[in-house]
Amino acid sequence: MNETQKSLILEAATTVVESAKTLQNGADIGIDAMKNFSRFSASKHSFEVYLLMDASFAAIPEIEKFQSAIFDFEGHYVKLRNLIDEKMDSKAAKPSFEVLENSFESLKKYLA
Image (cartoon, rainbow, N blue to C red; front, side, top):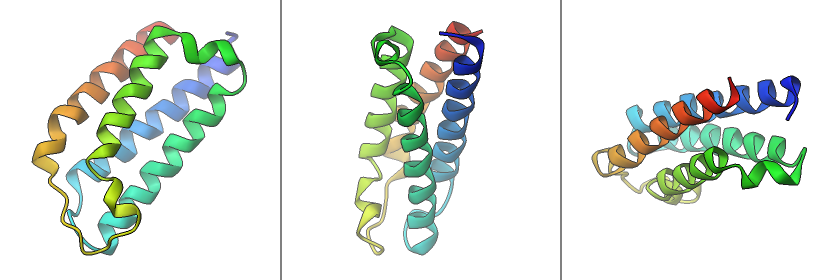
């Protein structure tokens, strides 16, 4: 992995965590919650696209753990994709968010 690729992946991962934090701490229901989920989903997609630069990236343990943490965290909010009146439980999502943050720190160390 070259420095440009590392930089792109780190930038995309940072955006995922920032949007996850907004989702975690933002509205639990309604249009604002849906908007936050949309931003998170877009950030996640961008991260996944950067991994397509080289198929071997997906096999890096730190990336695998980060992707798994994204998936677990997203599971708490996925209903916001279609249901505006569905109340999300951010307290239940907090442990998954903490795992996401920890896996991001590991990924940052790997990419440094």
